[in-house]
Length: 182
Length: 391
Image (cartoon, rainbow over all chains, first blue to last red; front, side, top):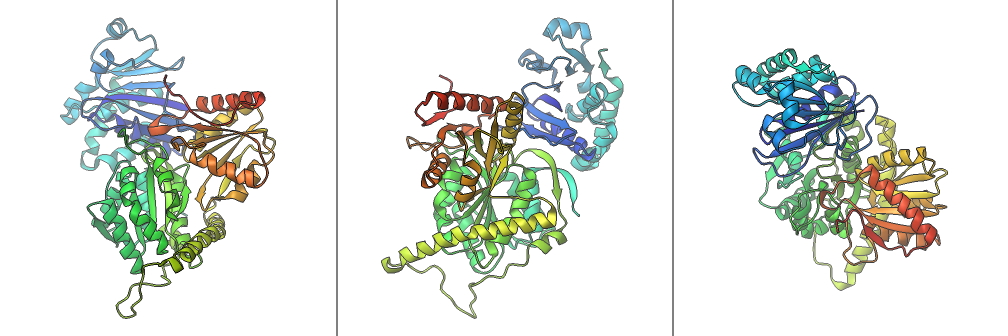
């Protein structure tokens, strides 16, 4: 079983990222769960959402405490949230940042393997909004392969309708531009 | 043969209500029930569901509308939670006393104060004695299946009682997971059209809901009690037929790895799946433990509880609500009475866990079972303990 934790800010679509990941995995015939860290929704406040993906039926409903993968939608969260908390050995942190690997290591002290992408820039250029949920899914696919790019198309189409193509474009561009630490 | 989809459980619940070909929905939105009602409202507004959607101004009015609707012979649904459920409670007793087969999904949530929108079973226990049939789901698939089952049983002329499906708020209602949604035709095969035994009809006037003077009130209550008790056979029969048709079988009380278990864990609702994972972990480390989990809350399945628990050395019973300063939690009290009546007196420890959305983890269950074994060994007083209190 793979466990994923998404960090975002209210309004950026972190919960949607988690949902789309689970829907894509379920479309692949796998078992999956997606759920937010439940609470009153406040725009701009730090939000977490969780995903489990497994080849077998999932029989737990506790929160994800020890993720294999952490995805951070907003660079400013790095200063206020320990995004690496509970990460399993061999896990990976996927960041939306314009900074280099060296800068991130120095500034955040994250020791885990990293994958980096300037998702904010991609989202603005592709969709004209700084909403990085679908963009970061491209990075997730590139860095982990937990779901396939093709499996996202259906859920994104269903969720975004007329703006699905833009979202898929941002997602695909992030896949190309994500650098994954070896 | 239906289709496997990824879907939020609340949306699946609304889809199931739609597939049950409901005639009227009256509801007031309240967290965490909101998505159920929103989606039903959409289904009606978009023309996918030919039903009346009555957007009432309160839960009291929601249930009042349901009473009128059901008495007029319409298949009727509502949904609520917590504070809204409390406001609705007055009419819930009336719906049951009038034997109206209304079906309701309750997204279980804590009661204020302090204000808390998260999951526990305080609302479910508050309404324990309203005289409705009550089941509780462990996952999204069960929510869907239990909705079809509820209409079928409630409307059966041997029963004619309102029916609640309890669904843990957030921890179930807001989770996206794989669910098999049957075709509408399949549901129609399982669930025949509603044929009311008696209905309000100006051409054939009847009186529903007159005063019950002291000379008949006791008898009316006795009948209600007997009918609720007897509904268990119909509930089990309808589950058997659901299983035969859809391949998913349900029982009033379920067991997991209890065959040779010395100590048992008891749970109800969505934490039961986490409890199974905990049992697996404990089994791997050689502990002889098993899980008894409840699906039917009213009528209370005493015989099945006894059968599942007899022979156990010690039992940990998890309650998701607190009976403030009572002997123990509400479910534990029920189980203790059941076992006492049957002259079976194991060591029982009651854990109150997961209040107001506090997470209940695999580690919590392992710790409960370890403490149970130690306490039973020492012969500690039984009583109840609130799990994970920060002191």
